[in-house]
Image 1: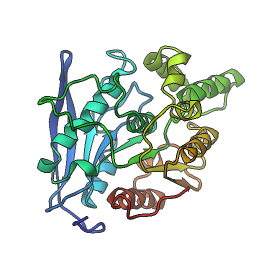
Image 2 (image 1 turned 120 degrees about the vertical axis):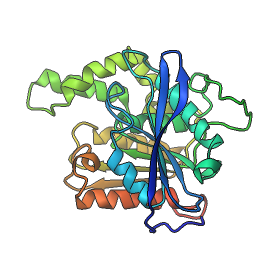
Image 3 (image 1 turned 45 degrees about the vertical axis):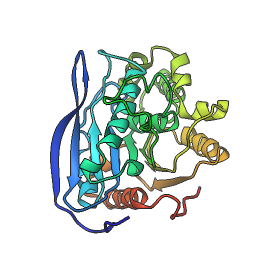
Length: 297
């Protein structure tokens, strides 16, 4: 890598149309370090229980990464009520391929393109990375057609991911049935699960944990996962099952637990020591050359 990991860069922010649907355009907000590069380039997938939010949600995080030499493309994608699963995965898959074809213009290289997401965005980031060639996800043609451009990625960053949608749905229903107190977000995510997935069969089919436990053949790029140990929205047991299954497949994964932090701490507490540490961890991970760094469980 030619750039300095800990250098501070001026950044340029711009919105571009990366995909045009009949229903309208989808935008990517680009956060580009102003330097010679080549820079790591990450497609950022926002959270919001698959049904809410937009590309501006993690503006603070994305600006911080860009100032440290990570180019970021924060993607909008289709959501309910306009489109349910797997429409968003189709858009994200296309977005990765779009970034790879435009990498040189963004002062990056195709082999430096990664995925990053928060909450349901973390789920979609790892799912897209595990299934880059899924014919459903890769159904949108990228003009001009290039047979050597696929949606495989160098690395994946997951921030408090909904790593088992079916497990989280049942967990949320159980909390509701037991009565309050429970996290306020539980009442929002239950209907969102239903709107996006439609049924429990789809939740299972698109669960990274269950995909690995079923033995499906998938890609397992190096992964980094960040989560607070006081997070009640994203059950730790689900993540520990995923880590064990990823390890069994030979995937390399770094897990960082942040003491006393709840869900969304990077967004909700931008000036905290935990957030600063998390951002530096992401920068180090995305900046490492493939094959030259040690990643372990």
